[in-house]
Length: 473
Image (cartoon, rainbow, N blue to C red):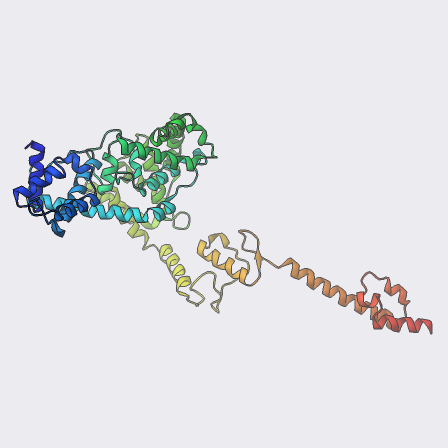
């Protein structure tokens, strides 16, 4: 028995095949190495079990049973997991107990992949990055496209985002958030499965660049149908020297101009988001800021008078603590907690809560009158209202048939209604003039020629006939 067969023999014994003849028969008829196991799937194991159970006793009948069938299927998943991470299956330093545990883990991973496949259509539809229209959207489009590919599994069950990863060789350092992320960083960029996957990525890439200026950049490599090669071309263009300089300049503008002074001018959460965007740009272009630099940036840029005490407290904590013990995340959490206690933050939260809960008191929201109804007239402070408040006002104006000028908050009456009212009043005035002329004995024909005369009287109304009768007499 070869060394590889001996390892398979140990595996079968741990799985529960206690008789040596049974193990020998499986090795001879099914698989004698890990590479042969790699070519199997769950259906093959079910077929194998059915074949052995249908044999006669003299021909080596074996009843696998549910437990051993399940473990054999998980063994297949375990071998495939090693392929997904570019490693060689090995049972060195393993015991029966630890091996069975690893099989159960591989079985659970297979269930996760099955669920991902079932949800793939919906997930990928929600994650679609949209067309790559221009250089301006590249920095946002790339992570969206990468996330989109991560929702679609390749031939070997690895998310397709592995095809466009940065590193050519498997990353053995980590850390990894989960096994899927490990597979993305370690899956082999070679072999039949990879060739099929890179072609699939190419097709997805074409669907988001066709008809866009970005299509021109990948046309020279279209014949290869290689998603990794096409993505490299796009990265080379959009992240070349000129674009990288522009992106760093953008981060520099954030560094120079970004400040937190109040919740009204810039919400603290948005301030942190913009700061993180700046940090990400510096990291991407090899100018990463460490935690100490980020904390110093935060202390300098938080200029709200109400947070002065919180900032000073954190400065003291940083100065008196061991090096690197106070992290940027700890500082931001502390300041965020202090922001939630600011009067302006509490006031804003109360107003929003009042609208959501349907409170009707005059102080519940800036858009409610004393009767609890939404005010639809002009708002001098329209730009200071929250987006939610403005939308509530606009919706209420639509219900009442009131049109407003864009963004001003000033109500405009309906022009068609005004025109109808104006025409009505003109007819009434014309009728009154007609009666006045008749009562004063003025020439009826002259009145008939009056442009403002009532249309009914002009074409033979009762009053017109009466006037003609008087004139003839």
